Each structure stands twice: as structure tokens, then as C-alpha cells.
Image 1 (spheres, chains in turn brown, purple, cyan):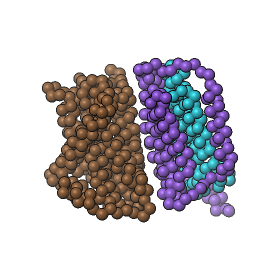
Image 2 (cartoon, chains in turn brown, cyan, red):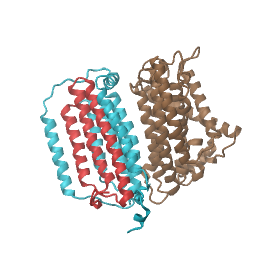
Image 3 (tube, helix red, strand yellow):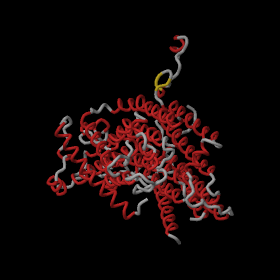
Image 4 (cartoon, helix red, strand yellow):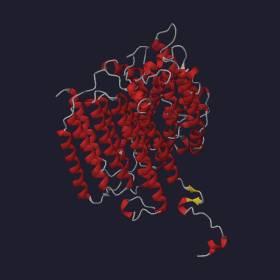
Amino acid sequence: MMGPLTALPLTLCVLFAGMILVGVLDALAWRLLGRVPIDDDDRLTLGGLRAVIRRQSISTERPDLAAWRLAPALYFGLAAAGLALVPVAVAVGRAPVDVEAGIVVWGAVEALTVIAVFLHGWSSNALLPLMGAYRFVAIGLSIMLVSMFVLIGAALPAGSLRLTAIVESQRELWNLVRQPLGLPLFLLLGLAITLRGPLDYADAPDLAGGTSAEDNAQLRLAWQLARAAMLVAFAAMAATVFLGGPLGPVLPGPVWLALKAGLVAAVLVVLGHLLARPDASRMMTFIWVVLLPLSFLDLAIAGLEALR
Amino acid sequence: MSWADGVFWLLAAVALLTGWRVFRTDSMVRASFLLLASFIAVGAMMLMLGAAYLGFATIFMMAVEMMVMALFMVMFMMNPAGLNPMVMVHQHGLAIVAGLVTFAGLSAFALSLDLPDRPLPGGAEVIAPLGRELLGPSMLVFESAGVTLLATMLCVVILSSRSGRFGPSDLGSVPPAVDPAIEEDP
Amino acid sequence: MTLQAIGVVAAGLIGLGVYGTLSQQSIVMLMMGLELIINGVLLATVGFWSLTTGGLPEGQLLAIVAMAVMAVEMAIGFALVVAVFRRREVDMTDRLGSMKH
């Protein structure tokens, strides 16, 4: 484990660099694919940023102000906590925060993220945000269940809940190959907790912005930044658990990790722009009837593989 | 007093204060998330005690549970957002006395305990032994818990599902009469 | 962080839980009281495990059983609230005169 004086600045620097990358990826995807029209607010430029900060602040009638202001901070903090768990090099102790039950901590980050999004929608005391929050909780908790089974499967070959051990177990074969169902299912969780594309039931345009519908400009900016941060954390985690994290020839570990995480982020951004969002109740049925059994199958495959 | 003691008492204060505010706030959503804060503080205390898995598992499990709780609160409460002050208590005096007596009795019990001082050895593995215990000597206990949870799931679906065998449960869901003439008879 | 200190904090949580369970009219709030009681039990269990057993795995097992109890309590409680509300449109304990269907 690194000391707090190294861990905190390192995590935050990587997070900010990643957020810039996410912004670039989003802009590129929008320009190249152009399927989903996004709000002007979503495309951040420096000039736009200044305008946003200066814009007049509005509010709703009797909101829960504390929760409203704190929700983006909570979301961002959870992203930072998730990213801090990721091992940057292959050796015990090479993650900013290296804990024995690392993958369980990531599970807690996922669960608390659902709460952050719910608080964001609920606290403005308005109809559309509340609907977004409710929809998101139903979908988010269900898809989280799927991701838990997938993550347990990824921990099986390592025989440990520690993320460095999970990386180490992929030295010969990545979990992507060993458990082919794992990464696709985990990516769906990524779409959900970063509020993107087919699983964006919180901030979708069909609810005029959903949980963000009543946000003033500054809050919306903070929320979008936190969303980008969560994508960075998720991409790094997916690269660690399924793509061998910092493992790779020639190049140093952190570079490999950055490349893999960048690839995962790009895939998520593209998926978010290309896939349509079904009705929430249909998605719910799909998750419970199709995805959850698939995650059981993934766990069975991982178990058989580990027994061999 | 070492810094660990300071952190411990801080967490204890958070756990108790938020636990108390649960019953004092007007907003149902705040009440469930205050309870979550109490659980997170207890989870952190467990981590300090060396329960590397249980501490995080508590935080994780309670986050999900309290999220569900908040949803149910909003569904069933006439005052979900806390726009109106409200007190919804009965036998308040009795409850306060019972709470205080419980606290006093259990504290006296805790303070009078004379148990062996065998702390967890520093740097000891705790997660792997727990797993071996669960799927080894104590498998029966673990599996009983698992079967109980499965039975719970079935119970919950049976109790709460709307569609009964003979129509919607809130309309009675009574079996049809064998002889149609009986049904027409008042 | 002695066993006595942990015991007192756990007793405080259990006492708060008893107060909530006895005083709240709403069934969901009552369940919060029950949760607080189990919260205290969990803390005490882990405290005993950590400070008096020298890391005996059975102590952690007991905490896991307490967690399972908590999950069962929550799930059955919510199912009962839903069932009672469907039938009688009631979510308060005082308005439940009988336990018959």
C-alpha cells in the first residue's frame, strides 16, 4: 500500500487525465457516429465551461439542498475510491489502496453509486428527476447483482479477493478468454453506473434529462464530470479484472493498464452511442430472465475451470 | 489515548448519533440513509477490529438494503420528502424507558465481563480461514443459512405477488365454486 | 478500543433499536429499529471475535449468520408490508386490529 501522500495525488491525477480522455472520446464518438444527439451541455469546451460557471443559479421548490449538492461529490468520491483500488503494477502493494478484500470494496462502490444517483434525482423534489431515480434504482440494483456473480467468477482462479492476486492469476491467460461471458456482462454494469446509452435510465432524454432535469448549470457540470470520473474508474477496474491489468510484454505495467483501460472506455463510449435504450420494464425482464442466468453460467464455467 | 482510540470513539459517535437521528428526521429517505451512515460507521469499526471481509461486506450489503428501504419508505409514507414535520410514535414514554433500560443493562453486562484477553494476532489471515470454515467444518450452518434465504425468497414472492392462483390477491383470490349455482346464492 | 468500550457502543445501538421498535407506528420505521438492534449485535460479535478468541473463524461465522438474519428480516418485513397494504391499505401497526387475512 502506498502512503496517503502518494496515493491521493496519484489517484486524482490519473482520474483527471482519464476524464479528459473520456471527454475527447465522447466528442469523437459524437462526431463520427452521430447517432445520439447529445445536449450542448454534454460537450464541454473551455469557453463553455466559463459560461456554465457564470450562469444564473436556479432551484426548485423546497429541495433537499444538502443531498442535492452532495450527490455529485459522492459520485465523484466513489469513482476516486474505485480507481484507488486498481493495481498499477504487478506486485503486492502496488495499488494506491491495496486491501485484502479489494473486489468486495469495489462491490460496495457499485452499491453506493446507485445511492448517489438516487439522491441526485430525489433531492430536487421534482417529478422527472424522481422518475429517473426510481427507474435507475430498479435497473441499477438488478444489473449490480449480475456484476457480483461475474466478479466472484473472476476472483475464483486467483483464490483471493485481492485485486493484485486477480491480476497475478491472469499471467498465463486473461480472464477475458477464460471466462468469455464475464467482460460483456460487466460492461453492461459499466453502462449503468456511468449512466450511458442503453442502460442510462437515470439521465435519459425521454425524461428531459431525468435526475439532472432540474440541475442548475454548475451542478450539471459537476454531475457530468463525476460521470466521466466513474467511467475512468470502471474502465480501469474492468481492465484489471478481465484484461490482465498491468500485465504485458515490453512496455511498463502502468502503460499497459492505461492502454487497456482506454480501450474499455472507448468501447463503452461507442456502445453508449450505438445501442438503443429499451423500455425500463423490458430491460428489467431481460436482466432477470437472460442476463442473471448468464452470469450463473459464467460462474459455473469459472468454477469448473478453477477445479481443473 | 492512541489515535486508533480517537478514531474508534469518533466512529462510535457517528454510529450512535445517526442511529438516533433515524427516528427524529422528518424525511423518510433521510431516515434510511442515516441508518446507512450508522451501518457504515459500524462497518469501519469492524475493519479496525481486523474483520477485513466482514467490514466491507456490511457496508456493501447495507448500501443495497437501505436503498431498497428508502424506496419502500417513499412508497408507503404520506410524507415521503419530509415537507411537513411529523411525529409518528406510540407508547413513547415506555419506548424511551425500555431503550434506556436495555442500554443500561447491556452496558453493565459489558463492563462487568471478565473475558480472556486474546486479541487477533497482528497480520493474521482472516478471510481465507473464514472461507474454509464456511465450506468446511461449519458447512451445515452455512448451508442452513443459504436454504433459509432461499425459503425467504419464496415466502416473499408468495406474500407480495399480486397475482394469486384464482385472480388478483387484493380482490380475494378465492377459488371458484364447484357448482355455479352456489356462487349466485348470497 | 477495549472489549468494554465496544460492548457499551453496541449496547447503545441496541438500546436505540429497542426504542425505535417500540415507539414507531409505521411498520417500515419499526423495521429500522430492528435493523439497529442487529447492527449492535454485529458490532458486539465482531468485537468478541477480534479481542477474545484470537481470531477463531467461528466468530466470523456467527457474524455472517447475523447478517443472514438481517436479510431475512428485511425481506419478510417488506413482503408483509406489501401484503397488508394490498389487503387493507394500512401501513401502521395501530391500525392492524387483527392478524387474520
